[in-house]
Image 1 (cartoon, rainbow, N blue to C red):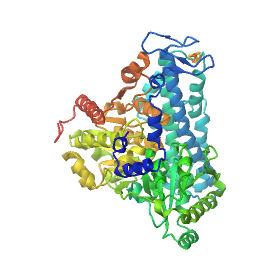
Image 2: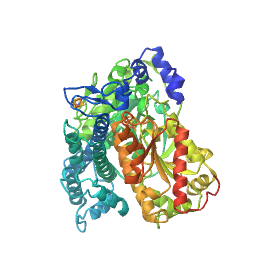
Image 3: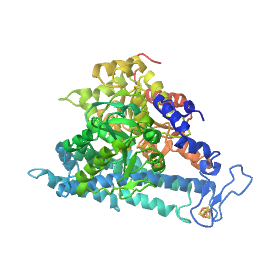
Image 4: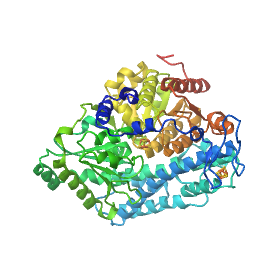
Length: 635
Ligand code: SF4
Ligand code: MSK
């Protein structure tokens, strides 16, 4: 595959020319080398749950139609799919658990380098959770909040606390369908039990439990991660920043953080400003210490500190290939096992830090909250000392950077729209009701070597903006749109329909609002809930002219997200397809019939513009059902 076919991003194209010339293997090369990939795996009809298998079902109906145990394609596909949900929900929820742990240790005075930054949010959360705040110190309140939310993971019966935030009709649907999550971990464990050989052998029954598990992620583990990160590290505010590989600096120490959790990266921000380390950088011939990020760790410190973003998922190896990254610090999730190998071609040190995640050819410095700041300083010092080892002749930093605005939340969107003294979603709802805006859409998720890098996100976003749809985004999708200029509050206006442009111009926001990392899709759930509560757009999320999409998804986390998004009532376009096409029953269920149960379904559409048009059609249908006014400017 040629560089231009691999990515639409100019900076990445330049780096791919370099990796090709230097014979450095990237994800795209490995993808090419793996062709053709296994057709059974793609269709979801390979089972290796027990050692009588692996069993593969013939998709053409000419060979075996069931495994050794008798499992049909429907059973095998459903089991594989909900195991993906369990993997994704576990990743998000364990992230939430780790933040709760940091909060608890901080409240007990056992950490170095942390403080509770948003006391107001802590108190609001405490009230919601029924924890007394009057006359109590913030650490006492924080301890109770952390313990209360810890209990959500192991709860055995009842309903999760944050699930209660959902609109009443939504909760009624979940209760009637028996998919209200009882405990976050409990539902994940039950997926593993049900999918063991010889347990749950009814495809629909399996998928319904997958929905329950995913709700425990979106309205449970992910929401805990978001809420407690805001409490610990501060709630984001709109912030200007820059994106793409051009944020790396030739004359400064470049330290790139990559992964997902904000716990270490947030203290790295402080350590990188340490006077002694800055002096050491100068002594080593560098003008300063430049911090940049990849993937969602990047989004976390972008949202709260405006730290520049070097790139999204498929740019992690390309950042190293600039020859200018002195140290890459990784924690968990979406970190390619290949980075150690790529780094070995350069002077770059890669340091893993999570007790849960080690990588080949990567040095490990274990992170602990008790010693967070000293560990962060040690890592920054290593980056500084590695600056002198650069091979200057091999440094190629693409010049591309784009300005962006990030830092939006469910709370500050209402202040931005309604003003400081009457924070409200009213202007947003009114703009939709009056036909100035068609609706709102969320575009989220990863990059995938099967799809031209960033093309899906950017083209889908542009088509929606043109049709007066306001967008919210997170994760690698946000980074793709930012590189294309869609998060720039002035330049992005040229892509907007007249109605959307009027709103963004008046309020001073970009038409694509960056809400943070993958766990922060929980913020999108709250935006939708607040829109329902504001009134005039129906009684439930599924009544509103809204939609979701993941046009380049690849991870199990994205499957869990997709399921909690449709369970919450949002029609969702996916590319690539879920690995379900080997089962008629599961395909029909997730791509159609599930809407009769939860009011929303998935659609698989490979063309992002067509995908956007499907979302627009869906919004038009909902507008008609709600008897909203005709669109003011666009059809
Ligand atoms: Fe084959 Fe059944 Fe074992 Fe799966 S569980 S590998 S279908 S025998
Ligand atoms: S990092 S899950 S590649 S969005 Fe959250 Fe990006 Fe997808 Fe990872």
